[in-house]
Image (cartoon, rainbow, N blue to C red; front, side):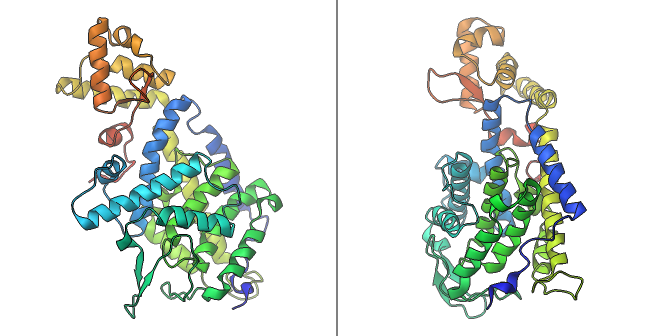
Length: 390
């Protein structure tokens, strides 16, 4: 198979709709969470990474409950083998994204073969053995998935036949060349994020894990473009319109439709439509998170929650003062617990201890300042619609 078989790798330049989406994405991203203290954004990032993992797994048909993901991060695994395996899969996704967010990933282009292998290795090496076996849907033949290694055999993806295994390296090399950020203007780099997502799945370089790798690549590319962050996730947008997402991916596999449909083997118009959908999902998710991260509205939701919990005697009176200060200032010195709670020092320390126990405040040590925490139990109240309602 010739590498020309997956051209064009980008929609043509000057498309007004895609350019508008890219410009909008840059503008919206620059505003997101700007009024929040960096410590608060970092804590929210932990919650959003879990959300990103939940939706990315959901796209693959693995519905791991957010609470089970939260337990996995605390080394609390189910006794049920299937559920435990999915918990470990979720934890693997979160840990790899955390490495990307912390800049602990390779500094190569996220489209490079080296980076793709690194992603696949880091994700798959954390998986239990039972998830490292692929069974062919027609023949039933089992293939071992080797972390970080390109496939050495042929695969079928629905009606699509990806390139032969021995030709995968040249397809990946062509992608790295075509999507070199040094050759692209800022708006074109964002359009490239969407185009990469399809073309990488088209090549299908690994036996399994390609979907998660592709979404983590998109996350890394968006970070490199300066619009991605740990406080929003395109995976949520893709999962909420999963049928549209999968249909758009499939349609972008179509061959060229006549002389007005570009000059490559594949349909340029279908690729443009996929890029439109993908970038639109990015803008939609940034807008969604911006609506949740307005400090005054977030504080209002926190207060409503605390009032209810105090009335039910599940939280102590005086808690709201500590939580408010943690939201506005980013962290709270333990010695201020009494003043902020409105009680004497001893009672203030008791209130602080109760908030730490339930995870509404967190700390890096017994003497360190405390920061706002976002345990899964409050996610729906503090961040409505972040996850689907059970």
